[in-house]
Image (tube, rainbow over all chains, first blue to last red; front, top):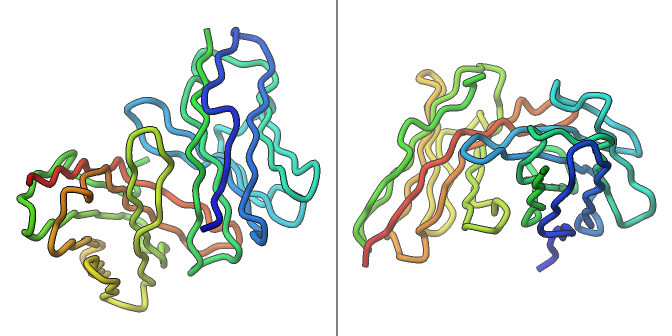
Length: 114
Length: 113
């Protein structure tokens, strides 16, 4: 069964450094998402991406965040200057159509900011 | 922001019995609801969904019920199995162009053999 893959599984970074989280969505999917889950809290929407542009972003997704689909298979989330509060589990998701098609999630990248 | 709430942080059920997980929402614009299951160190896995135009959707052992007037949905698992032990998340979408999901806090289900 096709799946969303994320790398790395765990990223440790010094505060202030840039980090890039990588995702390979399911190949025929058209809609891409990033979510995050801070330890002990809800899974929160960050950004959605369709047709090579951001379709919606949350208030969390400030100027320090960016997304890119550099080729036909990868979808990346960049944090330019990490803060301690960016420490969280970051999940990539994709779907081939809007509702009722569900989003399929990767196993996440645990980002630890020191 | 408490648009989707799961008031029970945990639930323990005997194998073979019914598990009922509950979810409440506040936004009447939500028109599509999903349940995801999550094991430790894995991402959420889609289980079952329901559109707001329906009140029930069934898939094998899993049934989701939607009560729009009460803004409440529930997931029934019958019969429960030890492999069902996981965190269950309720999520909602307003069906807009972006299809973003709003998640509840999750319920940890433990199915005892």
